[in-house]
Image 1: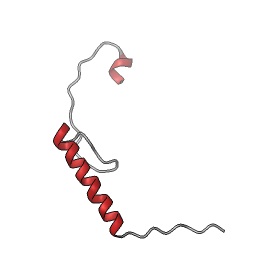
Image 2 (image 1 turned 45 degrees about the horizontal axis):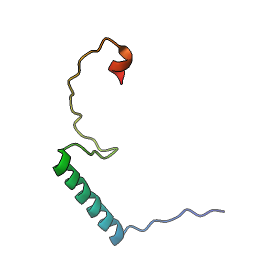
Image 3 (image 1 turned 60 degrees about the horizontal axis):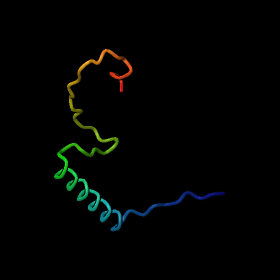
Image 4 (image 1 turned 120 degrees about the vertical axis):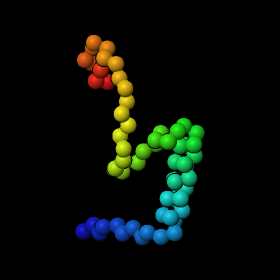
Length: 61
């Protein structure tokens, strides 16, 4: 039978998390806050103004 792989959470994961946060912070500084969002993270969805083109296909895109 196949055994489930166990993942040990340790120092390496902490370093990866810090590196990821630093990269996201750098992107936020360069391109503005909200340019990168984490999947599954609850947050404020920005309201974006739009203009109807008269074409439903274009409006939905």
